[in-house]
Length: 225
Length: 225
Image (tube, rainbow over all chains, first blue to last red; front, side):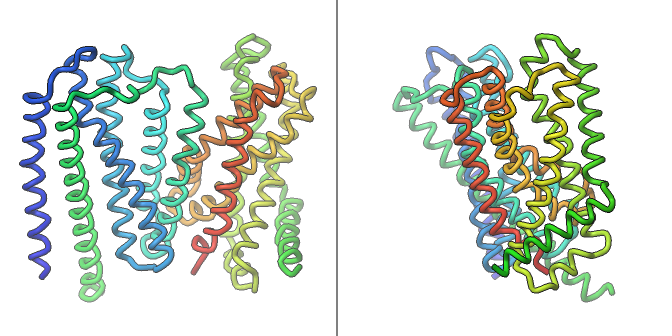
């Protein structure tokens, strides 16, 4: 049973890798080059899905944290901590791909634009979450603490976004309601799908790792007194 | 009624401790003075620049010494395991939170009120003539970061890096409150009518309500044994 489950995630990982290659081929070979932004626009096929996956991961942290506090079931804690780690990875991806694009589109690497700034703050909140987990006492207390932080951190997102938006209304904004060619739309949808699979794969793999770690702790308790 | 008398007992305890030792308020006050001193050297008092950035400087000062006070509030409880004692008493967890929240608010507001004339004196920015309009903002802004801060301070005290953990968790979360409070203060100092900053006031109030209620409800999971 156990090995069978591991097998499924491995297959998922391999399929994701294959699809990611296809996505790259589509992005550079099939999608037409955008008139105004040129080649720089290509980064958009990875940047936008990364953003959705990061916010998705933090939403998973939020829900799993509430479920953990309600049920005290370790399973939810493992889901929340795994999703937080993966969410931080995707935020790093946004924060890396964003400036590369901004440099060519806006002429600067960084502006204090609402989405950019919100992402940065969200990244800082969840890096704090990971630090809390690493530097706290182990055990049940830390799981409760991180669940509390997971809930508070996610509730903060709309407030952070609105306040930064009002704070700098004149700052160059992300392209709104971009007119996409049908081919571009197809490639973007495909990328979303592949990134969704990547998210699923990373979270599942991370949960497996936590389960293994947990088992190791139990074994240590039994055999190394 | 019972809750009210419990609350006043808890608050009385914190005030008595503070009256005996005077540790928290005095250290916050000294720190606030030091921050003003550093600001003077960094920005040169009386310059036009400092007039422009004084609302931000004021709130940075508050956030800086606020964290000192918040850190102290649960470190003190931890030292003699006195939190354990309070938890054993037949008192609702949320009443304990409320007691801590109110004592933190009281001490931090007190230091803020003393900081205002010092700020006026040292940096030559006239805050005192706007005091009537500034007080509500001071109160709302402080409620915002102290409500989350009290919750986080109860968590940070049980981590390995307690002093550094609190600001790392608190500052990113309280960005919306910080931005809104700074914007309100800046509008007041420029004698703008309330309509010009009412949306910032709304954000500040919303932040206070959301995080006060959430912290109040979630606190029992933090101190649970």
